[in-house]
Image 1 (cartoon, rainbow, N blue to C red):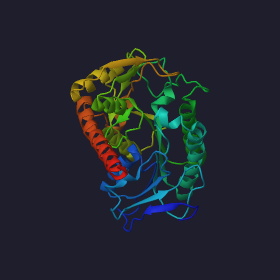
Image 2 (tube, rainbow, N blue to C red; image 1 turned 45 degrees about the vertical axis):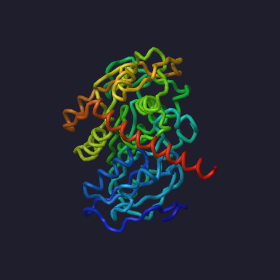
Image 3 (cartoon, rainbow, N blue to C red; image 1 turned 60 degrees about the vertical axis):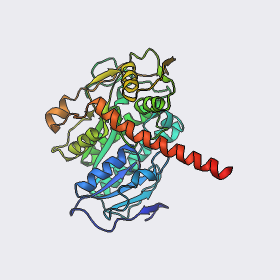
Image 4 (cartoon, rainbow, N blue to C red; image 1 turned 90 degrees about the vertical axis):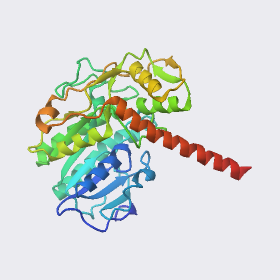
Length: 344
């Protein structure tokens, strides 16, 4: 493998003929779920990740699959050209504010320079390419719910701009490559997604609340808690991504993928306290700058053209996610006890 990339695992068999997929961000929360799904569908899968937020542990269930390989590489750098691919799924970008604000310049580069590198790779191999865009495109929306035709209300210089504006620029690049070079592009605007493989330091609201409840800590709500979100379970989201990639003809615009069941942040906190039987109190802190007041997708296009809508109710999804995060907390506690025993 060229370009200074490190091969972490090496697939030895092909999936179905003519179906080799590259998944960037393939060791991340969404990326690993997508890799699993593509392997089940018969693809040979190459995961590519710089492991800034992706985790080797996420790959445990698939690393031994002979149709799977993983390459350590940053898409901001020149990409290896010595593997042939038929499909590219670009999920390479930190998605939680805590992570994308840690290095905002690199976040922006990932969306813009990374997209350019991948689009050129897709052009080289005449591969279909999928962009994981975001509901953050809409900013703090003045239209509710948000249809794909809404242009958004986004700050170009606020603390979230490195992610929001980077993703907006990436969408422009994808559709210009479609118009200029005839590239087959698919762009999904992904709304809040949650589920197993979120990490303890993920920083997004569902995992934050569950971890605080499981630890018995106060649950931190920013602002009044009356701001709304729409939470989509990861399995539903991956199904939507696969359907969008496979639909013909390619939509000529981005497509919303998310759960239109809207809840307030305070309702989510109360649901999680109730589910976990936690003694946690809800405490309020000031709302961060540019935090959106409303977020709900209009998924009319996905329903009509993809035959897709979410199936997993919030309470069921929270139960599955809490079970996973509880396991991570138990492992963390066990590792801490082992370190203490060794040191004493």
